[in-house]
Amino acid sequence: MYVDSIKLINFRNYKNLDIKLNSRLNLFIGNNAQGKTNLLESIYICSTGKSYRTSIDKELINLSRDKAYIGIDVINEEFDKKLEIKFERNKGKTARINKVEVDKISDLYGAFNVVIFSPEDLKLVKEGPNQRRMFLDNEISQISPRYRYNLGRYNKILTQRNNLLKIIQYDKSKKKLLDVWNSQLIDVGTEILLKRLSFLKQLSIISKDIHRKITGSIEELDIEYMSSFEIESNDKQKIQNNFLNTLKKNIDKEIERGTTRFGPHRDDIKILVNNIDIRTFGSQGQQRTSALSLKLAEVELIKQAVGEYPVLLLDDVLSELDLNRRKYLVSTFKDIQTIITSTDDIDINEFNKLTKSIYYIKDGKVIETY
Image (cartoon, rainbow, N blue to C red; front, top):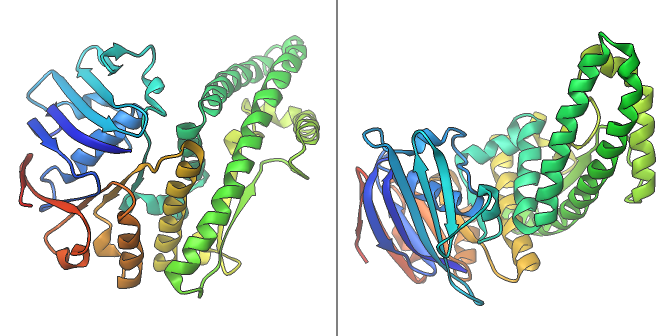
């Protein structure tokens, strides 16, 4: 699977761009604020329907225009796809797959898969649980439409239950209605938990192996799922029973606070290196390497799930990696399409043996050199 071409009209600082890509390695080189990250962002949006940099679609439209367009052609083993997204400042966005408009933007998930690694991914290790939940949800959603559907259902149920908890603060007679929302929350929440546990088990095995190779077997990476209530096993009935008992025991506190305090929306993952929680005690080098291991493991996991490698997007990260980590990355490029952005300090000689195209970007204009 690879992106064959990209067309951008009034997207960020690109007024009109139409380029072909190499099916293997693509290097986009330029100074900061020239549009390198914008290019990767456009590809990511066609995979997920949303930006990884902003939740405000209007920011994606060139400041002097009211409309913007992204179009990419994707080639894979089964059939080719043309993915298009149009943005209008006062109307939102619409998407088409092979010229057929999708019902929901989220239907773009699974049309083709990408994995992105950027300096922002240090948040996966360094910041709060929300970053790690987003990581799980985004990656599982790419390979499981059912999970994405359950996630949407769960969030709606959660909103309704939280609203009811607030109502009960003033009207105790409504407390009996909680049973209905508890049942729905537990059913859908358990499905989400089981899928997360299965995904994390696979991710842990692959990332552990990658991390050993990157660090020369000096470091051992482990990932643990941290549930907001006790999980004794992967048994569905036991998880449901524990979930229900936890909600019942804490109902008075939840009513007092007007919010649901237990469930997948409050869970986390713990990332350990040599049995040390690196969020708290790890060096920046360990945190960066762990994030890289997780992202590269995600590449392999998607390959196992869908039968094809995703497109790998690397946004300004090579200069932050030492020689061993860069060598390991380079060794993966020969099998998958990789799109890299970097400043002029990149050593192009590191990629001499690879099939590649090199482009220079300046002020939203792209020049292919070879």
